[in-house]
Length: 101
Image 1 (cartoon, helix red, strand yellow):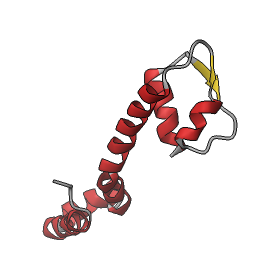
Image 2: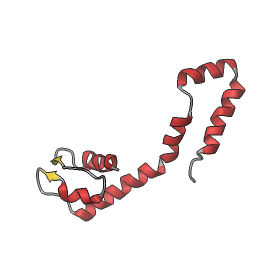
Image 3: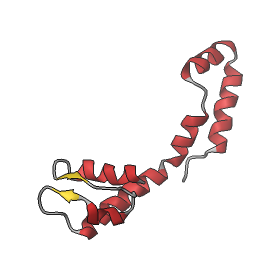
């Protein structure tokens, strides 16, 4: 979750902070961020954190699929030699990790 915290800092507050010691990746880190200027309100930061966390969680299926697909060079070889087999492999990954509605 540290990545989410850093993403919020980089996306919304670039240049307004310089470090935070011992990151845990939770909102508890908000109190430890070294702000260059005035810190944003905790409630505003929490809303931004929650939005980034939701986006991260909503894209889990994409990360799972990416890890399960064969490398692109192997996929190209599969397409050339056995298009139907390649389609079946792709379908099995998509079925295992469906896109949320």
